[in-house]
Every structure is written in structure tokens, then in C-alpha cells.
Image (cartoon, rainbow, N blue to C red):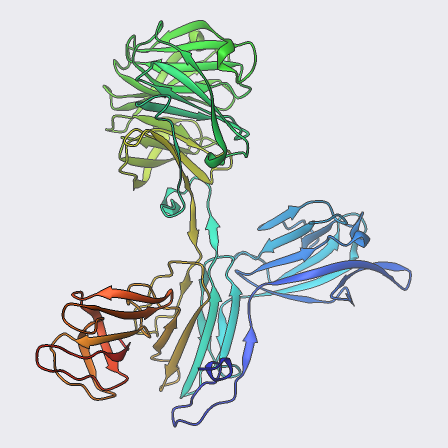
Length: 553
């Protein structure tokens, strides 16, 4: 089918309807500055300070790389003149290569905004009308292109004629929420083997700039140091050195550092202590020398993990015997000998690893296979913790750490003697109106997707009649296959059947087509759903010749 034919809707009586497209996605604006009547104005695509329209959920990029933008930083304001920064990301300096300002319009955005110059005021820009995103005016258009979705989008249908057919097209994108383990990506993980250094890796710590990481190794009773030539990217890692701690603890469990890298802390079960070392050269463990100790066996006889508040005034120990996170106050910041026990929170876990978010409002506890996320209603106070989610890792997470912005989870994976990075991202989603009666296939990859809808009653009931691209497991309506019916009987063109097997005979293999292209499938697995025969399919009684089928439900 040609591109032209793809874009033509067919009315209910079979007569082609006029193609009436509209673009409802985000946009990129190329911005320059030029004088109009002696006053500098922002020009967008050559037009002096035009009024703009935004739709909620979309992202709009203002390209400020032209040199005329130098000295004219573009900002957003409310209609009342207050700065508006929600969803705004500034990259570079106006007038220099790569400079831009991106705004992802939040659902809570006001109905009117302004774009202006932070130096020369509102007169350089103009107003921006903000409307709800995802509203499809079926009475005016029959093809809606939402571009790349920058946020989760809810679609609604408006002005629907009694009889109508229309399409909605979009491309999902990755979105990320700091410290949200519900978005843990298992498809984009990166691994770094540490087996050459230690076959029993435990606690884990990353330097705040992401250019180094450290882990405890129980096989060698040592701390191991690694460099990352690209911050937070394990694929650029290289081993640097080891530092033995066996003279102080032969059963080390976890490691932490002062934020400037001049103090190192080890918790171990040999003496149930937290040991402190001073580094004469920050972040270089070969310069470490023992300083002092805090004994914690009055609270727990098997301490597993340790971490600190970012200002060093609190210490947290994960206890295996007490199944609790123990909180201590340090009268002298970062000096563990001044720590005094204050309170605890029972996790009913072995607390193999614990970590807190940079603002102290989230706590993460690993039992090795699961990481529990807790919200702290009072920052850094463990007694205010409440469980919000449990994420199954299932690979022996005995050390956990986060990228400084909370968008990557790192674990030491004892099962495979490696450090693993999990990006905390998810795909943007589309929510359709309840009038759509079919189940919509889940979005699983970043590919342009088009939904085709039809109604015979003004939108009271809407049928999803096609979804492309199809899923790779023949799970989506509109998937095509060459195959045979499992019941080995003849089917004429247009007939429907269930239990289609994608193969040319009962023992061989045959081509199978989906969004990823043509594949060969071995006989045996029946495809779910109802399929329509697009060419006659013959049977010999024991074998069946392949026909072309399309899934319709």
C-alpha cells in the first residue's frame, strides 16, 4: 500500500473520505533577535514576536544558538509577571552553539504564559495560549499527529459525528523520575565485571561526580577502587587499586565516604563496628589510614550496611539481627566516634544494603532479591518511613547506590560478581477514552504508532480497528502472518478462524511477518486471537498449505 493510500480514510459506505490532517505535537522554534522600530524583538521563524500556542504534555524547544541571541536569555512568565520554571530546562548560553530552552508543558500549567527576555523585559516576546493536550476534534480532522510524546498523554474525542473514522499517531519517548524504581529498565542495563578483583562483592559507593566507584570484597577483605572516564558510564570503567581492611574486620559488608572523599567508612560483622579511615589524598584509598571506630553491637550484632546524611550529622546502619535501620546522631559531623544511637525503623529485612535519596525523603532497603522503597514524611527521620513499593531485582543486590540525580540505580550483583546499572526510565503512555471498547496493546518500544478508530454512534462506542506497529509476538490487532489453521480445514477468503499456526506444514517452518520484519517460526505455537483469511487456505487432511491471515481481535 502506498503512502498516499495509507493516509486515506474510508467512510462507512466505502467511499474514500478527504484526508484532513492536523499536527498536535510539540515543536522546535528557531529564535533570532532583530530590531523592530528601534526595539529588539525575538523573531521565531523570521516572524517578530508572534503569539504562540502550547498544548499540555508537549515539549517545545527554543533554539537560541544564533549569535543574535547573545545577551538575551529567553524565559517564561505567568500572565501576572512571575517567573515560570515548571518543566523548563536551559541548555548552554544564549547566542552560543547548542544553546536552547526546552519547556515540557505540565498538566498544571496556567491557561496563559509569556515568553520574554530576562534582561530586557516582556516587550521582546509575546503571549502563549495554553490548552489541554490530546483533544481530538473529530468533526474537523480525521488524522492527528501528536509527534513525540514528552509526557504521559490522555486522549479525548470531541465533536464526533454519528459515523466517523479517524487515526491518531504518536511516537513514545523515555521519561525519567528520580529514585522511582517502578521505572527500572531491565532492557538497558550495563554490567561491569569485578570478578578479577573479588568473587564476593558487597557494599557499593560512587563518587558524587560519577568518575569513580568503590566496592567491598569479602573474598579479599578489601576495598576496590575504579575509575570511569565518562561519568556514571560503567562501560568506561577501569580497575585502579585495592586497600586491605582485614586487620580491622575480616567480614566487611559495606562502604561509604564523606562527600569530599577525605573520610572512608567500613561496616563489618567481625567486630560489629563502623571503622573510619582518613584519606590524605581525597578519593585515593591507598592514602587511607585508620582513625576511629563506632561499636554498634548494642543495637545489632550483624550490621550489614552503612550510609550518612549528606551533611555528616546522621549515620544509618542496616541491621540483620535486629531487622531494622538504625539511626545515629553525630555531634561532630563525619566523626563516627561521636555517634549516639537515637532511634530505629523495623524493616523485617536482612538490610543487605540501605541508601537514602539526596534530600532524605526516600529510603531504599535491599534484602538481596528485592529493594523496598520507603517515603519519609520527615526528611532523614527513619521513624517516619512508610513502604511505597517493592522492586524485585532477583540477582543478589548486596550493595546499592544511585546516580547523584537519582536517575540510575547501581547494584553489586554477587550472583555474577559484577556491578550493574539500571536506568530509571519508562516510556510515555497514552490513555484512551473509556468509550474505546478494545484492549489497547502495551507500548513496548520507541517506534511511531498509529491507532485507527471508528464509531457508528457519535463516539458513545469507539472501536479500535488497527494498531501499528504491531507487537513482535503477534499480540496486536492488525498483525499479519502466513500460516495454517490448527483444525486443518479449508478456509475461503474472508472467513475467520482461531488457533492459527504460523507455518507451512505440521513439522516445518514458514515466514512470519510483524513490525520487526519477516521471520521464520517453527511449527507448534498457536497464535491467540481471531484471524481473518486474506487468501484461500487449503488442507489435505493431515497437512495445511499456508494462507495469509490478519488478526482482527
